[in-house]
Image (cartoon, rainbow, N blue to C red; front, side, top):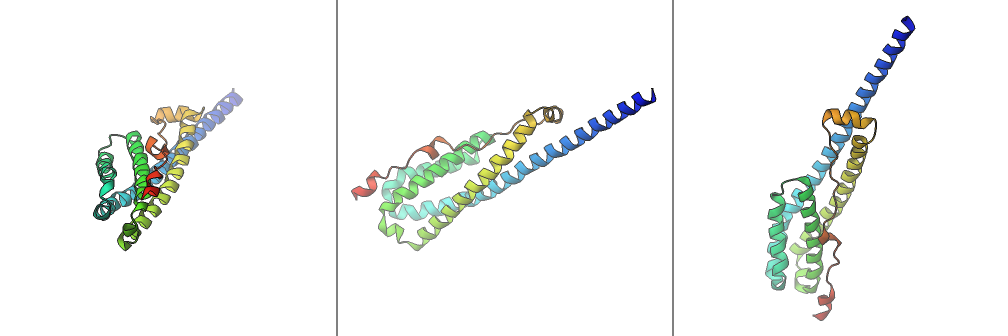
Length: 188
């Protein structure tokens, strides 16, 4: 009888240690996602603040790109009103695609390309976009680790008890997949 109690006590301790270790691992993974998301938010804020300056500079030179500029401005507003991460990630992907196309379209304006303010804005935007891409990769890696832990047995039992659900990964929107139209650059 004493040996049975000892075995049961050891099994109970193992279960408790498993629970504690799994709980702590899930919290660490969740915090890594939040940290990565915070990095993305900081970069998006920098880009968000840069867009009005870029639009104002471009408007003075590129009258023909009015439609794209209006789309950028409207999309900037929609991003601020996104109801959840999935919608926001989709809109941010569209913004990346739109900004990329806008910069390609602006290559047709030599006087704009020579404008020092525009060149500084373009360099800042390129740097932010590169940093965003790296931050999104880090975020997605953290989300995949978290989702695996939340969905795989036996950690899914602890995750379920904690009320944790899989998180969405960042996926580039349809606009980011579209190739920019560079055909009209050679017609000038």
